[in-house]
Image (tube, rainbow, N blue to C red):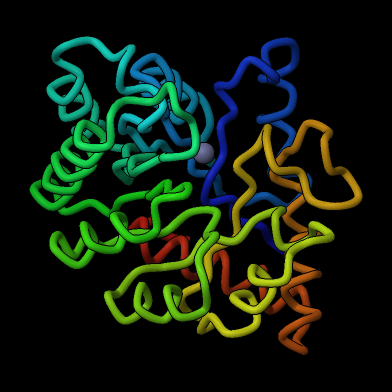
Length: 255
Ligand SMILES: [Zn+2]
């Protein structure tokens, strides 16, 4: 049984003490692929370095809406330069976050999101999208730009999922589907076409039950997959297999 983690942050401080050990051990535990997503500019460089260090790690580079205010002035140019790296397989994570009041103003976030979708199109790469409390504006920008990519940690309704899928997007589901209050995420997990589903962690965050609140890593996707399988009436192996197949297809990674 193999696991593909389409969204991880192994560059995060939570892994500072044992990063090498954890990342190196994952293939022996069934993890065959990881997309490490940049968020800050430094995170983008660290993602590339991790991808260079391990055959099973790939990098997404892009500026997260929470990191825009601290970004260097030429961040877009720096992101573009990193995209020429052979293991840079996506632009991400990018998007809109209206939850935190201290984030960049909405217009600034929207402009950065749009600019990075254009960058992805120019380089023929998919995007990894963060959407927190910004469903309406996210969908409007997606309709306009029509990127290939994934809505990571999907938190919208079944209707929004259906529209995203009709736009050609994938739906990333992680630990949130195992949480006690996960009614809508479970409806989405049941209804999403199996060939549009990506498995992910967002580690070190979002550990699934029974590890909720602990440091997450890619192996815990087994618990998320079991929950998705339960509501779909299929096996966890089928969910994991779809996660591997779909991620390889979206990110252009050969098995
Ligand atoms: Zn993330």
